[in-house]
Image (cartoon, rainbow, N blue to C red):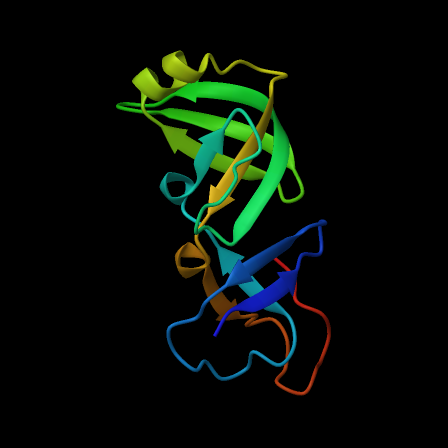
Length: 124
């Protein structure tokens, strides 16, 4: 079952938790690995990822074997790509891009800082 979570910083992510987790009645924490996010230079059409959002490249940082891209969007994201993908897509700071991620790649956790009786909207 997929769950849409409205994020405190803006935007929404859809998660598909694999287990029935206690404490998901109120605020939750979401995690999405930078390697689980795909970058598109145009709005993606007809794909299986449930999460599609736009953003602007805020920066690129070369790591050991990949490039980490900082994306300003709703939500903000860090994305890991190969140097070849960055070159092929001609990615650069200030460029408008689209991001996608499968709902099964979004991990959801109960917020440990809230008591089980507190009930609010989801946050990340």
